[in-house]
Image (cartoon, rainbow, N blue to C red; front, side):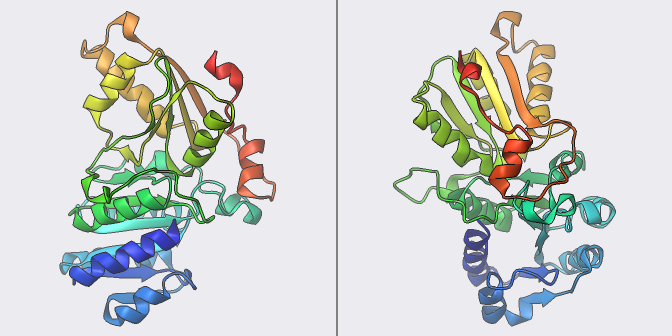
Length: 309
């Protein structure tokens, strides 16, 4: 996904002279093509992520569309105060990009496990929160954020994620804020809602076990298309949410909040309430080293056949 992101950012920067990229002394073998093509719009600020957020805010005040790029927790949790006060309070055109969401850097331990940032960031006003699932969504989200005037967060994978979407034309320009993407509508009663790079696992599980279940990808965690989501709540009797994030405050929490908002507004009758199951990290740190797949298994981020009965 990170390669898809930087390639698309180069394309956007070729037609938008205001795009500026800041990195925190990383991204080698990834960001060099951007730096070589746009040396006046690239800066390596060193291992100083909070300072990087402040620099981004200043550049945005001068009219730039600024991307800040670093690993997992470092441009997010480490910079939470700067994101809140410097960027979002002033509603500045800064895009925070974290490469290696979830357990992508599993071998480096909890300091590199980005498993709480979605819940923290989606509480901050003005901030759009994105978690693309594959290279196709990463490109689409990059295009969206380059055109969107305001703060955004993009959570990327880094493990060479394969493309999940089956599309025959360039539909990336059609993604607008809050879009929900249909991956497979093969079941009439059960649907799996996935966000971020868990999507490939979900699609493979459904296909491998020949399960009659629909699958939807949510590249946006904030906001979410309320009209489409309401229709999905009405359509399905059972919904499973899955995310590589703590259960508290994350994607599944956002879905449950909207479910009960719809109910309070009288948009859902009691007999229309779908059965909900959340798959997320259960309020734990996992101080073990291993691959992303291994840590997902340890954390219980797995579908089971019994969930589809």
